[in-house]
Length: 371
Image (cartoon, rainbow, N blue to C red; front, side, top):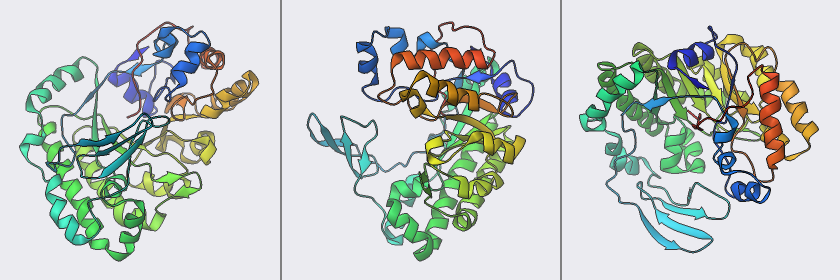
């Protein structure tokens, strides 16, 4: 089912809703399509069109928040198993072709405050960062039911892109002024962009990607989050709210329980993908945060690798009150992993729809709902 922006926003802010929302946030991991094809899956199952997932048409606010380094990405070397490259930040990147979709850096442009001084201009705002023609089209799209999303640089993620995790975590203590200046610079970029966009069209959802945690917990504690990231979040969220935004959505894998109070306190009111294997139980979180926090994801993707009973047990636990009735987009907690049989996935779809009181599957285009 295709949802309108108003239906989606009402559902996610615990207002009136046409029904429960059941979707796929990301899609298949590399190689799963071949596994399913060998098990007799149809092409529309491989593209997920056959499963009738819910979605809302999205249109991104045309603000370019990427670093403008002037560096032209290039491939250094390439084999069947690996690709080495230079990205637009000048980082050396390694991509494993057999098991990954995202290359990983092994060098970074910022190690010292002097390095940051050299690259700060990458994030300077000027009017050319806003596509004014796209902005006019965005106004029409929103009036036709599209959800307007706007991304901001991550408060942890963007400094990590510049420095690497180890150097960033040390810099909170060794070079706090540099980190504060980074976040002030990103905030300037976002707020000035929002002001221009808001003159033409409203914003519905402010989005931020962080991935600041592993299975054992976050890489930044509550005190550091409160000191560094919270002021940045609140500044950009205040500007987005003035432009009409009703959702502040954060994407972070791993176990963020230790800093979730701070995340919510900084304005975030929607989190995903809520990985159960990392200790994120959205049923318990709903009982704690009530209507202060909406969820997307939360269904254990690894349960689909087990038996039909394993799938049923997971859905029986998750697809019930207090998660039903608004504020939840039911979905797997990330990409569909290798080793999930197509029969298990079919059962997951059909049993989930039955539990949520949804009509039988009617094929529909698949739209990625990770925002």
